[in-house]
Image 1: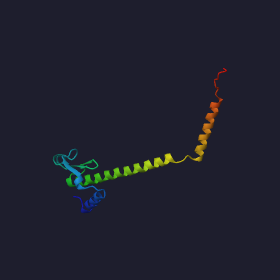
Image 2: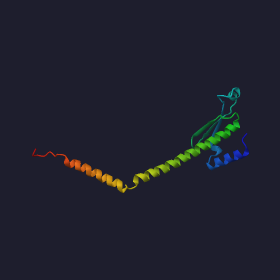
Image 3: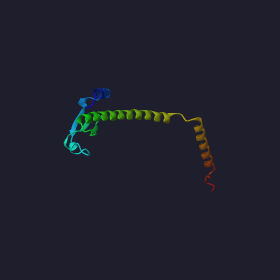
Image 4: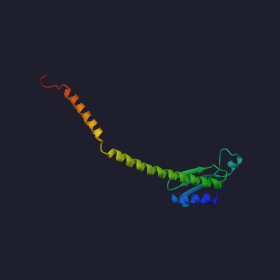
Length: 134
């Protein structure tokens, strides 16, 4: 069983992330894999889907259904936090990219650009122009 302190902490985390129990679809599935006959006969595997975000979690790490329910909710919170962090980081990266693209060129960079243009101009002026007299 999950301790009341851990359950209270998970409930607080879900409230902070605005995850309501009504937004969750929970199913219990027959387990599979290592664990023998007990795993294969009981429906201890928990499938959890958060409807607003579409995130799905499947948990079968424990033999107990209650522990798997707790673990699935914990995993769902982790994924939602990860998605939110990625969105925030993407917005920060986009703003930084925009700032870099729109900042003025440095003095040295401008000098190099002008120097390159002068070299190209000299190359072009040295080319022989074909005229009507030839």
